[in-house]
Image 1: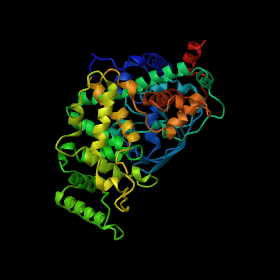
Image 2: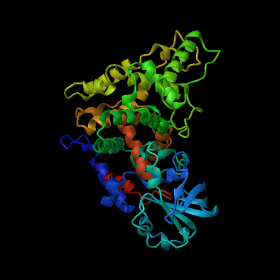
Image 3: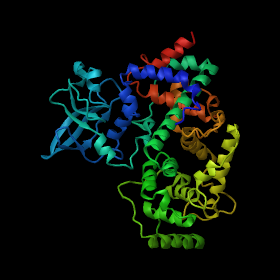
Image 4: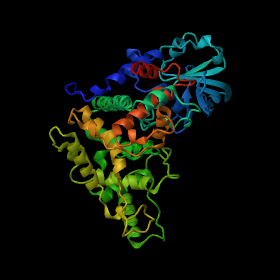
Length: 481
């Protein structure tokens, strides 16, 4: 990322308290910041969720581990997971006990778990890195590293893990200390959320910048990030996997051909249904014909699609139709975005981005029906990419990408359109502002919405027992004295 333009000056107040919190939990070494940009909670999610967790892990002794049950996620003081069960091979030996998870094995030493009786039943210590080794770990405690097994599954990105969703969203029984300060000081709250939102976008921009430095594949990186965002929270992994299985260079300029490749490679081309209308049946047969002639392979079936419990507008078939129309055509989506020239007007830049997305997603077949099996509607239009979803993609993909290349007007962040208030966002707001807060405080600006999520992730989720040691709460209290 170029250092010539500072889009994130407003993040400075939040950056300072965040660094204080990192130091507080002893995870602020330069090595940590440079080599691993995620949190322990990301690793806890990997351990907890079999969709992310590799089916087989390897102990430091060379034996293999299969997780029978990851255990109960512990929200109180003590080990991260209680009463887990693993099977060790060779020998099919079953071991039960607690599990503690860190980024570095040596975090066991720095956190002084060996002096805490609450960790006496830890049978397995899980870390991302293999070294430096923990010196105070009991000889009876097994240890393993996640990195090798995770890196062998390139379709899994830790960035895609919605850490707010684990293990469940439980509202506190009593008001949080920060609630009283923030509710009665709306101007301070606005500035705090703005700083936290800038911090969040700064992190996203740095992620893109690192990817651009590591891989000389600008349009492919953009395509992968955009596809993951189209997958929404339920299907981020399959969408990213599909983008790697069918790279941008393999797509066809004709959108029907691209959609056939997407659906065929994803294993989502539906079988003909006699209840379909004539137009739908003809179109589906044409897609099958394109797919059969392509000679391409369906991607790994173990990369599971979530198809149930979704709104029809969020179904992968519709999302892939949006992807097909966005990433086909004579001129790529990125080329169109590159050509935006609005001078210093961030508001006009965003307006033109929306125009490009909306025009690209005009597709009569899909605007008239939700799914292949749906009857076409002559009176109601179904947008392939709704404005709220487009706002989320703008904030989470397009803006960080162009900020990483220093190609945004400086005042762009002031005009971020709001996205839908999601369940995680609402839960985060309850923590910070109380159950009876007015959502108008943040509902109209995505930068403030991003700020709420960032504070919740950085300070509320890691607080296992109480908020008494929260560095952010200390700062708020000191600022408002």
